[in-house]
Each structure stands twice: as C-alpha cells, then as structure tokens.
Length: 115
Image (cartoon, rainbow, N blue to C red; front, side, top):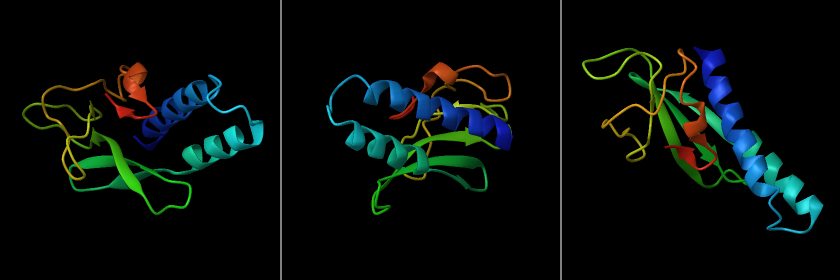
C-alpha cells in the first residue's frame, strides 16, 4: 500500500510542477525553491482507519490536509479508496475519487488535494 500511496504523492508533485511552471513567477530560483518546498513538504500520517495526506509550508509551520486513503474497507468504501478531505480529521464520505490499488483516479490527485 505504501508504494501506491507514493504514486499519489508523485502525481501531486507533478501537478504542482506543471502549475508552477506556467510563468506566475519569472525568477527561476524562486520557482525552484517553491517546488522543493512543496515536494519535500508532503507527508503521510497513519491513523486507525485512514492514511492522511498532509502538505506543509516551506517553514513547516502551516499544515493542511490534502486527502485521505482508506486503510481497510467498510460498508461504503474499499481498501485504497481515495477520499477528499472534509476537515482536518474527517474525509468526505460521499464518494471515492479513485482507488490506489486499482490504479484509478490519479488524475484527481491535484497539488491542492484529492478532489
């Protein structure tokens, strides 16, 4: 499961790089620093029912939840289902945005979160 979660993180990193290279900042050194901060700031925290994907600011002082991945199945979701964040500790349980074990939904893993 860890390898599949890493694929989600890599999809988020690549999406950020595409967005960042659109020319919002003309200084290459600043763009490179921003990419490094984002890419190195992604974390995965294991909880009882979910893996929580967290992004941190460059200084590490600000953290936000980017999504959840179900650890095991329940009545509504299967193991590996990608869920949008509803809050810091709660996923949106309306529907899955993909499944990391099936290899589906990686297009829903944006740098801003799973959606």
